[in-house]
Structures are given as C-alpha cells and as structure tokens.
Amino acid sequence: MAITEIYHTMLFHVLFITLWSCAITSAQTFDYVIVGGGPAGLTVANRLTENSSITVAVIEAGTFPEDVLGNVTQVPGYVGELSSGPEVFDTNIEWGFMTTPQPSKNGTSVIYPRAKTWGGCTSINSMAYARSAIGAYQFWADTVDDQSFTYDNLVSYYKKSMNFTPPDNETRFANTTPSYHVSSTAEGGPLAVSYPSYGTAFSTWVAKGMAALGLPQTFSAIDGILSGSGYLLLTVNHPNGHRASAETQFLRPYLDRPNLFLFNETLAQRIIFNGEKVATGVEVTTASTTYTISAAKEVILSAGVFQSPQLLMVSGVGPAATLEEYDIDVVADRPGVGQGMDDHLFVPVVYPVNLENIAVVTEDVIDEFNNEAIGALTTTGSDYVAFERIPTSLQANWSVETTEFVSSLPADWPTSQYLILPGALAGTPETDIVYSTLMPALIAPQSRGNVSISSSSMSDPPLINPNWLATTADQELILATVKRARQFMTSEAMSGVVIGEELAPGPSVQTDAELLKYIRETFVYMCHAHSTNKMGNSSNPMAVVDTTGKVYGVENLRVIDASIFPFLLPGPAPQTHIYMLAEKLADDIKNDN
Ligand SMILES: Cc1cc2nc3c(=O)[nH]c(=O)nc-3n(C[C@H](O)[C@H](O)[C@H](O)COP(=O)(O)OP(=O)(O)OC[C@H]3O[C@@H](n4cnc5c(N)ncnc54)[C@H](O)[C@@H]3O)c2cc1C
Image (cartoon, rainbow, N blue to C red; front, top):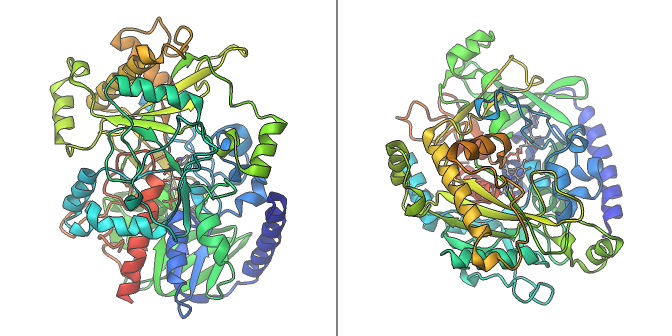
C-alpha cells in the first residue's frame, strides 16, 4: 500500500473510533482496561485479545501518528525531525514536557520528548534494537528475587515478538556486512527487525578505528553480550524499509479483532477504587466529556515512565506526604512511586570528514526509497556502535567512589557506549564541509532522579527531575568516555577519513575542567528514562509492583511499561526490553485468569 493510501485509511479509522468513543458517556465494562497505547500497552492488548472471549479496552491520549505527521514517522531517514525541534514539539503528537531546573544544565529546564500517539515513543524513536548483557539480567533476577529474569529465561520472550529478516548484503556496501548468530534470531513475531539496506561509509572507518584500539567487530546486538563493536539492528519492515512501531506491528494488523476496543484521543484522569481498594475502572475524558470505563478483571497502566507514576499518585497510590499536599485521599502509601528515575546520556564529539553528506535528501534519494527501499533514507545513520569497560589507562585519576561504583556492577556491564552519527551534532559547521559525530555515552549512570505531581489533575504535566550527572562517579565516567572517543577519532586507522581539527569539543578544550564544562553544556539525554515504579519483592518498602506488575497495597491493578524495571539495562535499545517484558507479563496475566 502506498504511503498516501495508508494515510487516508488511517484518517477514516481515526474519525470512526473518535466518533464511536465520543458516543460512550455511560459506563462500559471490558475484561481489561489498559491505559496507554505505547509498546507495553499494545503488546499486552495484542496478546490478551488473541483469546476472542476476552475483551480489552485501550485508552490513548493521542491519535494515529500518520494523522498528525503524514509519512514522516515511517521513513527511518527522517528520524531527526521527530525527536526534537519546535515543529514536532508544537504538534499534538508530543506531550511537551519540560524537566524541573537541572543543576547539570546550569539550572535550566529542558525539553524531555515523550510521544502522545498510538505506538507511544516507538512511533518517534530512533528504532535501535538490541538486547542487554547476561550479567545485567542476572543482577535483575537477584535484585527482585525472581530467577525468571535471567537471560536464559527471558530469551524466549525476546524471540516471541521478533520477526527477523537477514541483511540484504546486495544493497549494502561490501564492507558493511553485519555479523550475527542465526540462533539468536527468530521469525514469525509481530515486530519486524532487520539491518537497513544501507550501511554508512562513516561506519566502515569507525569500525577500523575501534578495532585498532581493541574493540573489533564482534558485537551482534542480540547475543546477551555487550562488548566489542558492530552494526546495529533497527525495528524496520522488510522489504519496504518503513518504521516498525508498536502501532504498525501490534495494532494496525489487528484492528478488526471484535474484542479490541480503542479509545482514541482520550485522557485517563484517575483509577477508580472501591472501598476494598480494588481497581474497578478508569475515569477518562474524550473531548470535553468525562465518563468511566470499567474493568471486570484488571486495570493495567502502560502510560510510560512519567505518567504511570503520575496516574498512580493522582489516584491515591504513592508517597502519603505528596498525596496529602494535594488533598488526594490515600488509598495506599507507597513511597517508591515516582522514585529512582534512571537515564542514559551522551556527548557529541565531532570531526570534519572526507565523506559524502548523506543528510542531503535529493529527489533521487526519495525515489530510491519509495521505489526500491534502498539508499540513505532506509537508515537513521546511527548504524555502528561499540561497548567497553573504560581501559585502566583512563582510570588513573578516578576517585575511590568511582572505582567502587564500577566494581559493584556485574562484570559484563559496560561503562561506555560509542554510537556514530554521520553529520554534525554540535557546533556551527560551515556548509561546504562534511562532519561526522561519535556519541560517547554513559550507560552505567549512578545518579537517580524522580517524578512527582504538581496538582491532583492529569491535565497538568508531571514534575520530571532526571538529576543527571549528580554524582562524582557519573562525571568521571563520562569524562573518561569522551576522552576515549577522542582516541578513536584521532587514531591512525581513521586518519584516512578525518581531515581536520576537531569541531567539538574543539582543540581549546583540554583540561578535565574544560571538558566537564563542555559535557554539561552539550550532553544529550537519550530519552531512555526508566524505573519510576520499580518492581521488587514484598519486603522491599520502595517496591511499587511485584514481578508480575501487580501494584502492592491494592487489588486488580498492574503497571506494565518502562517504569517497572528495577533499573535501566545497559545498551542502546530499551524498547527491546519493554516489548519483551510486556510479552512475559501478558503470559502472567493469562495464567492468573
Ligand atoms: C526521541 C526518542 C528516541 C528513542 N530512541 C530509542 C531507540 O532508538 N531504541 C530504543 O529501544 N528506545 C528508544 N527510545 C525509548 C523508547 O521508545 C521508550 O523507552 C519506550 O517507547 C517506552 O515505552 P512505554 O510503553 O513504557 O511508554 P511510551 O512509549 O511512552 O507509551 C506510553 C503511551 O501512554 C500514553 N499515555 C500517557 N498518559 C496517558 C493518559 N493519562 N491517558 C491516555 N494515554 C496516556 C502516551 O500518549 C503514550 O502513547 C527513544 C525514545 C524517544 C522519545
């Protein structure tokens, strides 16, 4: 189907369900009521409605992304237009959240992108797909006292979603062939995963630079090993090269299920509890009409890392002192709600390169994509990544605090990630020079932030405090990681492509103090926020949910989304783990009922 046809089909569909849901002003009852149509919510809805005798309602505040942005979300090469910029921020596909003033950003508030649309953030994200490290999963299992979270026990849930297509090495440059193990892949799941039809020229040089400094191309993204370097998988459809989001893969092909009910452009206002603290439904607003959607079995929150804790709090589940401050009746005093936000960040390191500028989108490039699904628009550009524990030579000046923190991590948890971006992500480059960026990233952050409320209403934004770079360990780790990125870019192996002085941080930025200043001014958070309603066992007072997502202190209420991870797993692709966790917990729900 051509992109324009999809767009018109979706427009009709949206119109239909909006009118339909507006007509419901009295209570309707479904077996399960899910709040949030992101990857977690849509995976659970999809699996539960496989059984035609189970009814499921999904409440989503946004609408279909194609209705707002046409085909922009579908083209991997247009990803840069989705995550930032006033054009997107001003549309109703984005929540428009700002953080609280951040000391690490000189006391300013910054935009924190969150999608408001079917598919959630998978409709606007960078599509990276990868599993984490085996030791990190063991740490998860031990932290929550449940050995079903070891890598070996989770692999089947990663595979359940996956529909892998091998790379098309005919269309990629000969020296951009990815390496992977077929045994780690799976076919037949809803989520299309593949390597784009185009490998960037910059990646071939970075691969050489990485290998020369001890990070050979051994990484395959889906083996449970985060070390070495390699090509990154994307959630893209084959053969058309379009984005594979939760909306396109877990919802759109299943719209005709008669037991699946969608509430489009509908804001969940609060969870309704009866006198026995049993969740019985959700109060919602569509347009200006407020009504109740009732759940015969369970209410499931999948509203994401910021709004699931917000919805719990405005409904009376959270830290009692916060609830009382806003005159909210306390249903369950759970001090862990909103606590422990965990996030990744990176810093741009930019050099001029002797390469073609693939950011220039010509008519030919568009035709290649539309007619043959090949060329630069099939990739986000960030196609090569590396991981390591920082070498000892760069640990020389570390504080005891940093050394102790790093040694407390599982042995295979890398401190550092390096992702490429053909193009300049910092500075003001001259137009006739082509730049490329290496993005050294902190993927073992020690700092934790939090989410709270500013009122008792879901119509007011949550208070988001990421608290980035608050500890000495975080600052020393990212400092060492940026220094290491400079080593790669100035290595002999890359001298054939790097053709001049560093654009950013720039030659004048040399001392640790200068580099740290640069880091604070330019770091970019990766929008991977997690862990604001942590899972844990019942003896942990800060645990919000058990390992099946059930909320402590109340009945018939689960949370299933990024907020319930005990911590953010290392790696470039949290969506991968969210799909996996939703698959696992959907099985738990089926087994419970
Ligand atoms: C710019 C960007 C780039 C990213 N890049 C990558 C990447 O390359 N790879 C990767 O793995 N991850 C990436 N991520 C992260 C990943 O997409 C998210 O971690 C993931 O989508 C979170 O899933 P979720 O289901 O927890 O919540 P979300 O995806 O946030 O979905 C929550 C849904 O709930 C809805 N909702 C919220 N509150 C309400 C309410 N009160 N009523 C009704 N509906 C509500 C929202 O509108 C949204 O649709 C990126 C994220 C962003 C923003």
